[in-house]
Length: 358
Image (cartoon, rainbow, N blue to C red; front, side):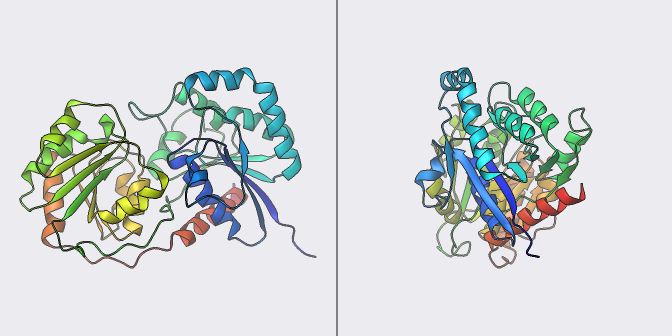
């Protein structure tokens, strides 16, 4: 008798950033597995739909682009529930995976519960980082966790934060590695033969350690150029970075298609964080053959402790400067670039196996 394909729904309704990208790469990884039938559901406003990484097959739902739009979407919840119900009835999933929690997910879990579908939620942070996230994020995430049949995290640090709290007490939690986003091949570090290039990329928020980097860079004795790229509120720390002669601050959103080129520009990606759950940027940097300097905080320790391309250091300016100098003076060997597609297939398989064991 031929085994029927397992039907898997993957959804994420963010407009831009890591959420839609994770959903697309995870859906691709699931499709690479035998005996799977995968449906990807994204926001009709998702930036990735206009990029070179646009998925071949996707169901789009209308979401929102502002707080006012979110309120309006909630006021039309009955119609939205009807649309979600039709998607679930037509596809008849065996399991549904939320790639990253968002404000409207409880509507989807309501429909899935009524249809008897098992729910897996990928939780990226046990608690929101300071200044990050959206209104009521912690409350909505706790309620979403209570609706899940299984939780997946990308670090033991986050898993421990969930299992020691009250919300996931009756829900299996499994910690798996964050695969690198699928990008482009890049030349080896320092192949450009110019001044070494240091990159800090991501949301420009206080917990990212902008102040630590601003204090560290003047103590790096080697010549270098540094770009600090991402979006965030103006601050004295960004102002101080901008005054450094070798630093360029680019306070802007980075489009989906630009990210691989930005990582490829760098020789070293620096993560001077004060706290962290894990780092998708760091995973992509390692997979692209870049060096990584990361502070020894949160989930970064387990993510990079066994990687020869990464140097971990204390979250202190002097330690960050020393770590950068160590790489500049004696760069360790760079391993062959990772097959990102295979890594996402491995994650997809691990999620399905862990679900069966829970």
